[in-house]
Each structure stands twice: as structure tokens, then as C-alpha cells.
Image (cartoon, rainbow, N blue to C red; front, side, top):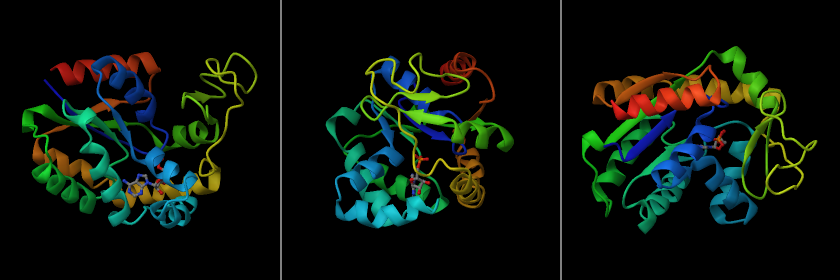
Length: 220
Ligand code: AMP
């Protein structure tokens, strides 16, 4: 059975939404690198101060910061039965760092228990998705103003608070984030293919259809 999941795909491919559902179903934590970094920025930690400038420019935050944040998170007791990595690794260098973390981790998982899922989707669909993305600052639920709009204009269906747009979800920063993705993250597909743990799914479908494909892929 798969226990450690690495979700790979360009910004806006829907991996965050799918992770939320899968992590609830499997009862394992959703380790979302972007959210962990944004939390550090909000709390004005040393890591947050470094990360801010890079995030605002759509660039990758230096590996020392990301590595520390992730290593601390996946060493917590709630990760002992597995976890979903969303947004890490994002470069070959980070994938090597992850291998080192696994070697030194208190929790060991075999190769058969690990899988890297690639959410495949055409780039032109993505800018549209990103600029329409909103989320609830309280519960984190993600909406799309076009395809999955909240019932009450601009407010979270669950918490009834005003939805917010991420600062880096503008068209300009989105384009920079795609560039970073193509240059740094895409080579990871070959990396995990060589490792024999890569599975590709079609992310250009409804949320339910993507989830079904995901479930079939991880149960194979
Ligand atoms: P995300 O929420 O996953 O779209 O990430 C938002 C931003 O956080 C990215 O554009 C990067 O600036 C930064 N970030 C997230 N994950 C990583 C990572 N693994 N390595 C470096 N920077 C990251």
C-alpha cells in the first residue's frame, strides 16, 4: 500500500485540492510547502523573512529554508504512517535532499510504499485557473470563481468569511512561476521515472474524475 505521496505538477494543476481529499480519506497529513512558507511569512520568522522576496517574484525559495521546514514537518509523529508532499521537491537538488531526509528519518518507508504522481495539464488552462483561484483564510478551502464558485458571493461556504486571493496568483507572477516550473521542476519527472515510482494522471478533468484516476493509480 502507498503511504508516501509526492504530488508533482505545474502551479494551478489541482494538486492542492486533490491532496485535501486524499489526506482526509487516508488519514495522513497534507504537507503543503507553499502554505508552510506563507505561515512563516505571516509569523515573521527568520525563514519567512528570507522566503518572502522569492515567493513574491515567483522564484524558488533557497533550499536551506525549504529543507529545514519540510524536514521538521515530516519528522512530527503524525507523519509516522505516511504523508502527502505537495510542492516539494521542486528541483533535482531538492529531490536529492529528500532522499537524505528519508535516510535519516525516524520513519522508514519501502520503495513500494512511495509514489510520485504527475498531474498532467496543458499550460493555457492554468493561467485562467490561477487568476480565478480564491481561498478561505480560515479553513483553507480552495475555490475557483468560474468552475467552483462559493455559494455566497465572495464568502467561504463553511466559515462565511471573505475569500482571499494569493498575492502570487496574478497573471504576471503566474507566468514567472511557470518558467520556474519548466526549468526546475519538470526534470523531476525523469528523475522519478528512473526511480520507477512515477505515475501520470490527466489533471484536465473535473475534480471527481481526477480523484477517481488518482485512486485507481495508487491502488494498482
Ligand atoms: P505554491 O503554494 O506551492 O504554489 O508555492 C508558492 C511559492 O512558494 C512558490 O512559487 C515558491 O516561491 C515557494 N515554494 C513552494 N514550494 C517550494 C519549494 N519546494 N522550493 C522552493 N520554493 C518553494
